[in-house]
Length: 317
Image 1 (cartoon, rainbow, N blue to C red):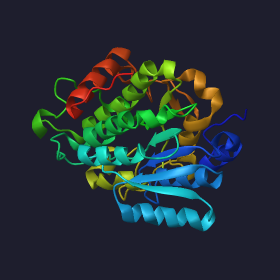
Image 2 (cartoon, one colour):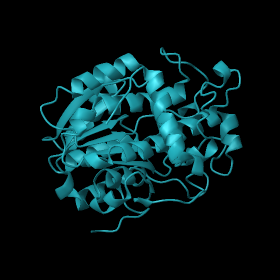
Image 3 (cartoon, rainbow, N blue to C red):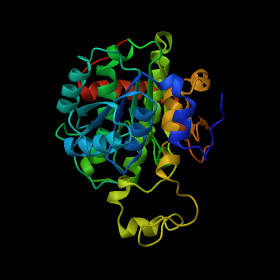
Image 4 (cartoon, rainbow, N blue to C red):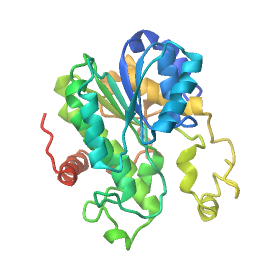
């Protein structure tokens, strides 16, 4: 089995794992053309996967679809409109997936927002927590029957080192209805939730052959940074110039930052590490990148119960 690292790209890993990927059905959320999701979808289609392009904007889905088809005219692509900020939209999308004639082998939960100003969704939840976690929680659980039709289902929860910026505040996930809002603490809360979700998924479904990972993609500058202000770039002056361009050598290409998505989804050598947090296609336990509060099994159980309460539905194995 090839060894993957920080220099690997999504395409190089997909080609190395082509025999494991070909013919599989993969849902990728957040597929705007310039981001990680589109690159993941592109390389999966290139090696013969059936790819479901899932996103909020049908126009952006179609743009990515056309981009992929130019390179791989035979690509088998499906469109799935889903707004993670709306539980109604998530339920409608899940109902569509449940009608697919084939199993869903992998779900890559890539969509998200970062550092957004305070707002609430139509369901009354703080937007970063709602979009980055609750929408993913609800969608994954609703399509679980399709995942369990697969012989080797995987769920990939795209987190970041932002999990170190704050835990899930179980007593006040809404920051006192916005009165105590800190957008970076809110982002940290949502990224901690991404990690905890994978921890609990792995625990609950370990006897069903389902494997779940959370992961840190690394650092490419994408549309995820769209909410960052001049003040934010100044606050992160060790990483960004005043104009928002990367400072130093931390920034990676989209291909490099999408690599762990592919290994998390298909690398058979990672299967024994079910529930782990991955970075550079390997298990990472460095506290610089993964906080203890984000891997705590008790927190994972508490988050699951809270999430069920917020979506008004229980999900039993």
